[in-house]
Picture (cartoon, one colour):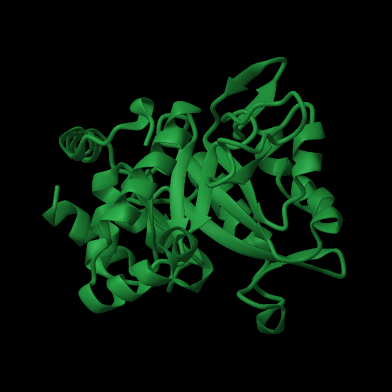
Length: 280
């Protein structure tokens, strides 16, 4: 582990406690948010400002669904997320947690269909937020924070993200690659390309680590070291970190929290909120 990313559990606990004391937002990402009782609003009611929508392109329309076979034509990206977000920002709809430049929403858009075909329609769908000046934007070498930071994951085409000028749809980088694999020749990773870097936790944990977690509910020391290194690398590039696919165990969530990860990927939002508050 490099000197730059040495672990300080005490400092990370202090960081999280300070975060919880000064703002409403919690270090939680609402995974598959559209499966909550009230998409977007369940997360906002809990104090979560990072949500994920799986987006499918069919007949020119963007639908939100877990699989293509689950598509319900009444559940569009526009109706479930984009219009409610715009209404909340502009004060036309009430929300427990406000969305603003001071408390921005991270909107993770999981491209499920072909990325090249979906990219244009997703950009177009973001137009109302863009036209109103609410999107975080990279332009003329400046990254300007907006009320909403749109981040593409899944099949999002990195080459199109890199080519966009100005850029207001960003990329979810692979956290295991950001140290050694640049996004393009002569280009370095940073928040102007990828404000978020993620990994499938079983890939980090490994077979033995997964077995250990299943049996004990906790994380092996070797996995802890890997987490510290990956999180530290992301933070050194001013990128936030997230790990998905983890076993639903308290010990794993608390390890993410204490090791300094910016988000706990969660489905049980109230439960994980209480877990964080009771252990901070």
